[in-house]
Amino acid sequence: TLFRSFFAAALIFLLHPVNSEAVNHLMARSDILLTFFILFSFYFFIRGIENRRFTAISCLFYILALLSKENAILFSAVLFVFLLFFNRDKISKFIPFFIISSIFLACWKYWKLGIFTASPAGIKYSGWFLNFLTQVKTLFYYLKLFFIPRGFSFDHGWLRVNSVFAPMPWVCLGLMVI
Image: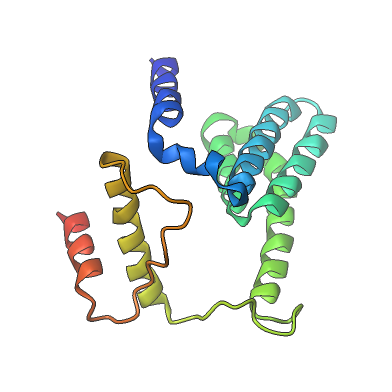
């Protein structure tokens, strides 16, 4: 059943040593805050389908999640898909989250470009394809850590791919295609 699959996923998260990093490393408190605020936002969103007051509380928790960690932006997509599949007639409940997400993305983009700061936040953009190869390499690195949990650290180093000719991301990409 659905409950058993949720329970199994929670057990893996609870018992697998790869998740110790979120607790051991002080900087990972943003992950815990993100999860806390997103869960409360989703809870109040479900309650807010019938009561507008709870929708406002849900939006507040969503804003707090965005301020905790920018990955919370994905929650708006989760809400949209949730409404699309389970409450299509209440799709208008997504509008406040869309507005909040749009404002956050605009501010985040300006901040990353350095308009709000003196320098562009220390991020070097090297093109979408090299960033894609970096993500492929990072995905396989974390899959390796999931199945072979050793060598944990709160700082794994930078896995950035600096050249299109680096062999490791292409091997990982080939494994993904297979």
